[in-house]
Image (cartoon, rainbow, N blue to C red; front, side):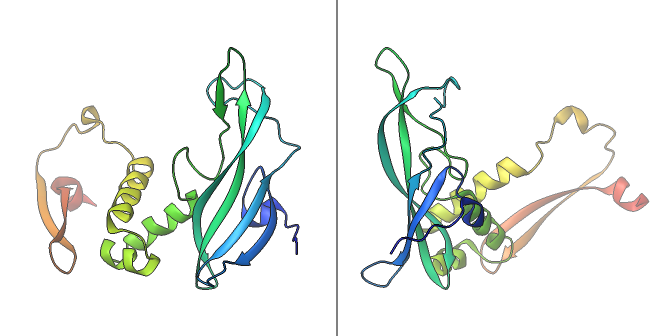
Length: 183
């Protein structure tokens, strides 16, 4: 049975949802998509319009649905430009080479604010190194970078190590002591 669901409901821009089902073992939900034929094939490196050489299928992990892990099978176009160059088109909801959607990465990072990396790893049934790397990449992307030139006028600073979770998971916190006393 094929279900036509708008790409806006699941946020899978450029994809058409064909089927949503439990896999054969009843362990995970699989969302089968096909590339939206109305979308132009654009070379990700140059931004030029190209022709479709072939379609490539990928599987990416998404946020759990109804308590089941969710895998989205997407279809991307291999764009032919010229001189035998072929590149896979970009996808708005997943980075190149990444096996997790952006919203799944946000979920992981959000859970890491309240749980240990090991607890998030067990909860989502993925390796703790993967959780740590996703959280680190999300923090680097979202936190503002500190420019040393902007750190002028500091007279006294306070440095403290705070246990983020039980065990040996610590954060180093640096305070502007003068700004802290005047606020």
